[in-house]
Length: 229
Image (tube, rainbow, N blue to C red; front, side, top):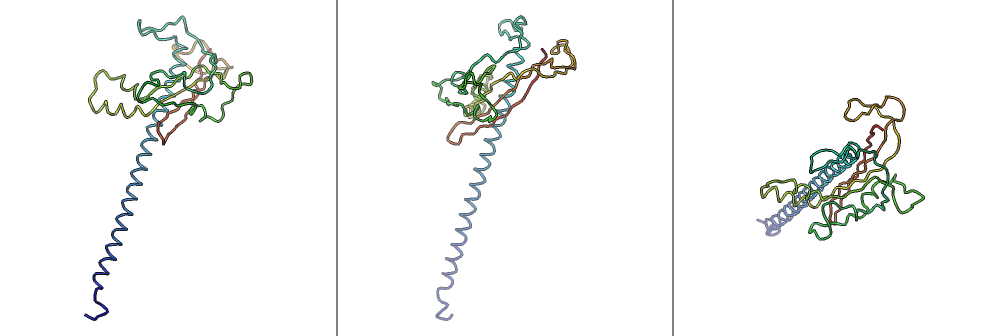
């Protein structure tokens, strides 16, 4: 071996080791990024499902008023109280007074503020009450608490999953938007309405799924239902 070639193997080994270390580090960074991306995707998907729950619960609220409030004691509807609810509530967009199954004393408490209302840019407040919306109702629920309360008995894994879901909240508010054409069949909902004219009442349901934390997520959805007058 020539004098100028001495130590070449050592230098080559160091260069290769450095290159492999850089490649390994890059793979770790890429893998961590993919893992984080997958986590975010899963969290968004869960938040979306919670938002869908909000829409369903909002629609159920209106239908429950229309068909008559359900009495849990008699397991019957109070048909004497059937009504098409009006925008009788003045609401400032905050869910502070709309929390149904949680409060500030709970470990999973989260002040959702007016994140849901602010997610709908087409909302307008009436001039007569510029700081309030006219709504039928507004509600905020902790999703994990709803799940855990539905258990008659649960495994430890199910309890852990319900605890994770306590990071999610669903909220809805309902606005009566006025007369609208109604077309339907059947005697359970249709009350002698015809296929012509504005013989229905329309309601817009605004629903949100929220994930609490520094990486807060809000998914906003909306739907419209029309009930016969």
